Length: 378
Image (cartoon, rainbow, N blue to C red):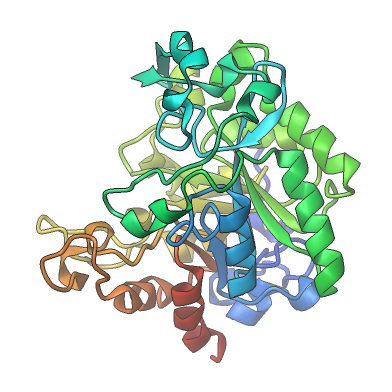
């Protein structure tokens, strides 16, 4: 465990992260959104993160999804990173690419189908670490949840699986065209699992960021992981703003499970746990239910103290994920009987944004930006 850093020593990092916020004093929890946002990088508060791009409208983690999110005005675009067999970083939500590519239609890869246990979960399919980059580039991306987003299947096969290097080049090119940096939110997926395979993610990410000058304190990217140890490792390699992702309250980070650390997410969102996180990260990205739990009928309940306590510790909050479809919404915000029709997403956005969070992940950046505009005026 790293030495804790007292919140009075930190800079409150809002949507724009580093160096631009107000110093955390005794009343840090009362800091205004503008103070937490930090105008130095030009990002608004609350900011909207395109979750895997604009994945409500295009297959996730494709250039079609990334470009649409950027064109819609998303403040930050997310990438999840997994490695190939030969050590290249790919943008995929999971290393299991069965549902997100056409790999099953390639007879030459039929013998690659296998069963693995990843972070305690047994999965059967095709996995990136069993393919070279050249082999991955013969595949095409497709919609992960066609039952919910049949309209996205129109774009099946249109795009390749992008590499992280390709995304960095794209962001650099788009930034020069627009005259402002393109912000990225970069996640290490299953870092403990991959380190055991000799495919450590953090060093590869750091090398790529350095190559594009994105490794500094004021660089236009956030680094995120569900494993605090991965964030600590990244902190020793680069100075970018870092966010610890947190699943549901009863869950434990996988690196904690491997190390025998008994703490759960519920422990990490206590004032003590948040102060510990603030010793090596600038923010947290909790599951939405950590901010506003749902009751036994799957309806929105009463907000918790987590936003106030995180701000008091000098941390920003980027919770995940609001989607427009009924099936993903709380029961009291669904409309009609079709689970794949849009519900009252604006009501859900308002409920979460009203808690004072600094940003939000969404598959539907356009909807999210409209909702955020109401709060940015305050």
